Image (tube, rainbow, N blue to C red; front, side, top):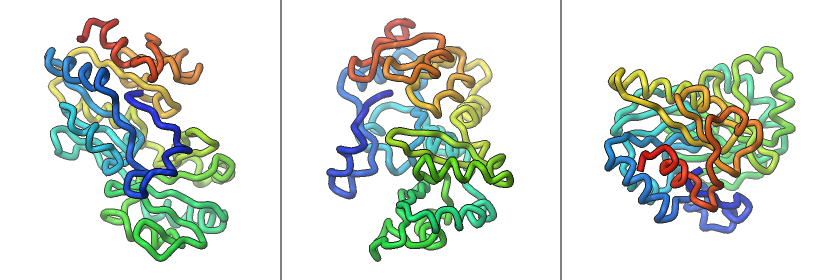
Length: 256
């Protein structure tokens, strides 16, 4: 939405930069500054973990952050929502994940841990689910990323499926999180914490986890590069990320 980077190219970056989000160009950055200068509040609403939001992106004047696809939210640095996977849920998932033969990605507030049978003995890597969780802050995993085929297999578990939210991402990758951890839930927690007379709420998105975002805002805006099913739920469709769609959306609604 704000910026995009081919996830395949990200694997060629230095390891400490590999998991960071891309950051917007100056046109988009200035639009955010102007939006806030006009008296509005701006929030990041992302599926990424807090520590994986690029420092350059955090320099913009955000009032708060909804991250981990709604699992965690804060306003002015103060947490107002914090929902991670329960120990019992992780225990139920362990056989599926440890026996998959895949590299499984666990996301916590403080970063990412990759689990695989042949993982190196180094920070950020683990060979079992237990080892992965012990590296996360407060032993809390908010999201787990895996192949879409493995996620579909887990979804067939009648005891687990009702407890989980499934979001298919790029490159045949799907993330799972607790059922209540959606962008809609995260946004609602922010709105509940604000003055009831906060005014019109606009939301801009481009991915599957933004379906719930569209349901949480007064005016839903889909990027031009968003999938068709998201565009159908939107009130307005702006230009694509490579044509500064966020800027054009804010201009269209006379917010800048």
